Length: 318
Length: 318
Image (cartoon, rainbow over all chains, first blue to last red; front, side, top):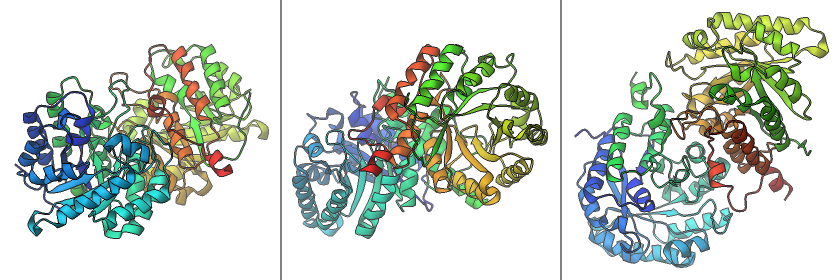
């Protein structure tokens, strides 16, 4: 197995096995999840969000998350994440040996109640509890705790969300003990001017604790928002293979930004991701195998690479 | 009829009636073209490329171009463009009273031969001939001559295209008499870093003669490239309603960038286009009427506007 270990400029964090799989009605068999995650690692992905420690009654697609984590952590060179909505999920994740937890408190109160059944204030307190649990563990067993503020760019229930509030909330979460705090455009409401402005403020306020960007492509603005975030200094981006999690009845109206299109854009711009485009595109076959009939998105997968395309590292070497 | 006449920050130039309609096999009836162009004007589009003065044997979809121009120039507040590949086309366009001509010489020699049947050098000379024809006319009858360099960001036949050559070619075209020279990503090969670099150079070399950007969304990079071009100071962008001209067998793999998604992005960023989103979205119905069964693209048309969305001018006034 060849795993890329060279220097990279931008970290692409694959969230398909979590954000993608939990958004589709079909359940991918555990064995295919293992093979898909291994294929992503082999393509050079260095961070993979492999599942969610939520109630299996609520999301049966995530019922095997502990097993998926335990297999994924054996892959060389991959940082394994799992989403935890609350302390109970964090306890399960830590028991399973998850090295990195991600928590999704919502800036919008209505979305917070709908998504994790608690107010925004309670969700911030819950992050503090999970951080306290982390701090109670022996040094070698403490997971990294990442927070991504959901609905940071607007909410389908409440509409516009105050930018000042999002930044204040980010500071509160960093103070509560989160290792990093990023911003998530859960609803595909963000625009490039807003993205540039908010990540600039986030980095000014949080310094080294400022986290990455999680964009959805609901209104086609996903990669445009990535360009704006890059300018603000963001170097970590979530994305999902095949844009998994989109609306099956709305072709092109994808959920997460498409990993293949994101990696193509970054590499074309001369930014090294450590990811091999051909292997990444080949890994789509495992999604198709594990979720037969589920639509996969992605312009590059459909159009192919440009004639004479060279990845960033090759051009640097030339 | 209400036509927006206020100040704008960015000019969106609709090319659907030309680039869109010439790329689809079906022919839109002339009467529907008239109504579609009128609806676009009523939505606030201030520049519309209404057709192409090419051989009707080669492109029967454009057989009615003179009639379409003559109707469109009667619409208040709209700058009417037509594409002319050569001097013969320019003569026909001028005879029809077209106020603005656009010419598409290719930076790639192979594409030039395939697209307009002449070498790149001959195409540059042809632009000079058309400019000489313009200069021979009485002052009040001289059309504006815009050039968009095709395959400026890469070519499906030749692969990468020299950036230095594209900039030299732009200077030659400006020297030949073109009023403006823009850059076209005919093949969807461009990336944001390249776009920013090349438009920055173009504006340095050409000053006030530097023209706009024409992007295709073949690899999903269209709006990301717009963000990069905005940073380089570009204020005119071509786009096509419904992304018309895409590949019918590849959902999402659109041709031109989608006007609705572009206008949404610009307005959300606080950049005034003068275009009313609701009327623009409503005009899609005329494309559907005139080209029954033809797929229309666009994320905003599918997902709807965000809750609480306010156009740029409304936010400025607030």
